[in-house]
Amino acid sequence: MQIRVLGSAAGGGFPQWNCNCPNCSGVRQGTIKAQARTQSSIIIGNGSADWALINASPDVLTQIKNTPVLQPARQARDSGIAAVVLMDAQVDHVTGLMMLRERSAPLPIYATTQVFEDLTSGLPLVSALAHYCKVDQRLIEPDRAGFEIPEIAGLTFKPISLSSKAPPYSPHRHDPHPGDNIGLLVTDHATHKTVFYAPGLGLIEPAVKEAMAQADVLLVDGTFWTDDEMITLGLSAKRAIDMGHLAQSGPGGMIEALAAYPNKRRILIHINNTNPILREDSAQALQLKSLGIEVAFDGMHIEV
Ligand code: MLT
Ligand code: MN
Ligand code: ZN
Image (tube, rainbow, N blue to C red; front, side, top):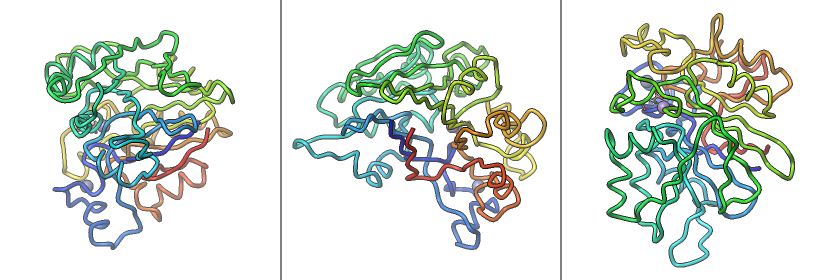
């Protein structure tokens, strides 16, 4: 199975348009050792020209431009994006859907009941697309047997419900339901190799532990280094956990959770622009390096 990281930053991207935090201003001015990043999205494929787009970021057009395999040019109008799979209904994961409206056939979207509800109510992008290419709604049920995408044979996608957060415009924001946020265990039938992808992960619950134990490669929430990162920088009153993200450092943090799997490939993704790990020479980035934990970047290829 092939994975390409289209966008490795959290919502807002890096640098964020209005942000003057040390990271954003540093990367803008070229005074820190860091690389700009677009918003959260990956593609997964089986080696053919057809790919599953996992989350449709607001930066999807730039990402497609930067990823030539997504334009196989087999006919007058064509795309390597055969289907979309959504992890949640957050702005950074869904607003790119509107950019795919010129398709000539309905866009296959795999999502949970909760996500389709959000996208036909609080943020009605699926309803809006009905006036353009239309959506082929393919409902997925978390914590059941995995589903297959007929356009991308040989891979099984198993959705795992995650404790994270539905978006602020969701009818479920303060009334969490399984299916508001999911992770994916993707298995390649030929190699029996599995990746666990979870860009928004607030709590390592037993099902998450099980998924992590089962996977060969972990591609998980790298949003914040500390739970109070946004507060300390004076940018927000919200803690990481209020936004559905488990911080990396400290007791019970993501690094501790990943320490159980020293022999697996472990990659942090969905990195917020405030996170010190974006500076390649920061103490935090060097700590990750010494632990063998990677930081995803745009254009990263992962072979599982
Ligand atoms: C999140 O995952 O918390 C989002 O990146 C927030 C957003 O996009 O506004
Ligand atoms: Mn996000
Ligand atoms: Zn910033």
